[in-house]
Length: 256
Image (tube, rainbow, N blue to C red; front, side, top):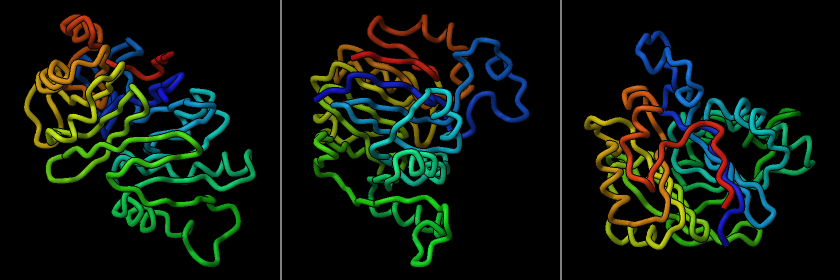
């Protein structure tokens, strides 16, 4: 099953745009598409509401998007710009009167337990996040009737998970994907893939590298995310892209 709706909650790199103390043209831009919170998406599928990654801007993103229900959080990896906002699932705990399921690899769970130890203790203080944690790896899994295919990608030497829902796939924080994992990204209607900037980076695809991968995988449509201020102005870069590729931006909604 493919999503019925995807909302880009954030499309920026770890420092967001504008970046603190930066006076470049992108950080000073008045185009709202150049203002990027830390990367995350909201997936509505089969009547369920999933969020991929709870970064430092999680609360702001959920309020801005008007998200009223959360059925699960999926984590790509353990870096702070993808996990730091987990505490704010408390609002959903209160509204739904239930724990929120979190799905992540073992090392991500370990990082969450370190960062949010108060949520995992035996004698928890009243009002801490109520969560149910489920370990996943490279095998397909099901969340409340929704089938999800993980895709392993490399973020320099770190393993990161992308996720495929039907004919939609989301990959962030990658600079290489093994051929057998690339095969899990074929025959897509929509691929979301990261590209940090135009110049080389140790742990992220450049724009040219992402476009080369898109050309090989041949999705019907592709969107670029996890974008830094070094990429350039949204309006200018978007004009340079192939017809089936666009830069994503915060608040972009795909009705699939």
